[in-house]
Image (cartoon, rainbow, N blue to C red):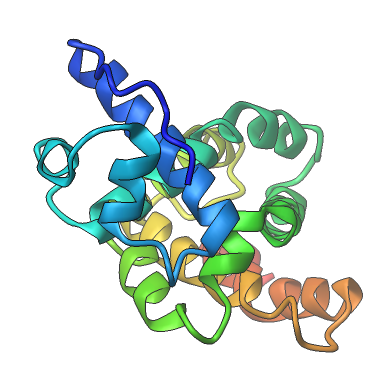
Length: 203
């Protein structure tokens, strides 16, 4: 395995980015399931204890890789969602956009394969992922409340928690023979009505 520059940046954020770059390179080469902290240390050109000074364990490093990649998508996803006129369309098409993107991401594909699914589900349902989901959806939810399209009694944190589970379930279906039209219909029938104001549900 080729080693990278072993000089770790003194700034904590830059140092973590250095290790995340090394981790991504290892995941691409060996897969998430087979990559060890020793592999990542070698790729980064440092000792394993140096990596542990920045990431307490392998799972926290994998989660940080996922978070970094996902955060890069937020602005693009929000712009896509805001092009939809109704909250129902925003919710359904926004989830479809995130799921399609997740299906194309090589790291998500590695994480949802059967060999690493248990680990992935533990990490992807963590509070950090809920934080990221809330960061993604909160402005969209707030705008929907202002338009009278979202039940104002619903807690945004609870919504983010639920949507993070829905996204994980849908991303994990990329190997199944379920087409986009069927997924859209399920979301419109079984998910979207839960967010509507009571007045709309009664009409």
